Image 1 (tube, rainbow, N blue to C red):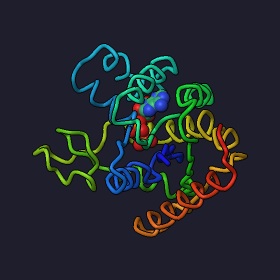
Image 2 (cartoon, rainbow, N blue to C red):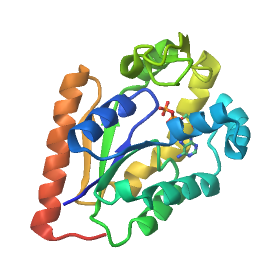
Image 3 (cartoon, rainbow, N blue to C red):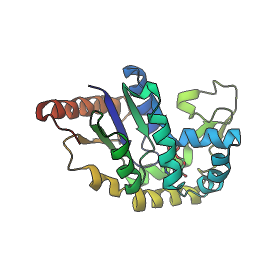
Image 4 (cartoon, rainbow, N blue to C red):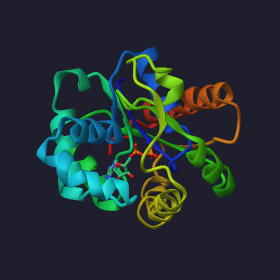
Length: 217
Ligand code: ADP
């Protein structure tokens, strides 16, 4: 069965880092809408130009644009054998569109990483990225030769805005997905390797649920 994974969780929960590892282990693409948008900004594309201000103030890029990006990306060959979505969906409209896009494929496995608010604020105010490739310090360690800088949307005011937007627009997705037999939550307030182990267990158990019940969305 293909692993069609949605990583859900607030900014700073560690989704990106975890998604990267699972993608590598499974040999499937990690699709991060934050990375796609940052690359678009970096390359000065039309979408990038529109997204720049929106991202800088911690707001969400429009559903139409994001759904278009994901529809196109999931249509590429390498996503046939599974994928990991990091940062999408972020609204109920995006989630509904995703269900339609993946119709006929193996069911989505949705894993939420849960982290308390105070810890998120602490992590986000510290997060550093490579100013050349935009990868996080953990992932990149300055590999692209750029300096490690604080991500421009990670200043305090914007951090709080992003958390607010998360609670208002993205948190409702837990309700959208939680009745599905393929939904799982893991505790993100643990060392990364413990979170990783819990995620692997959650994904396996979600997969068994599907196999047992023959569930299709
Ligand atoms: P984080 O990793 O902190 O959750 P991302 O790197 O995923 O943040 O996203 C950075 C910014 O890109 C978001 O604050 C938002 O402005 C924009 N963005 C990313 N994904 C989406 C999406 N699915 N819908 C709307 N905006 C998005």
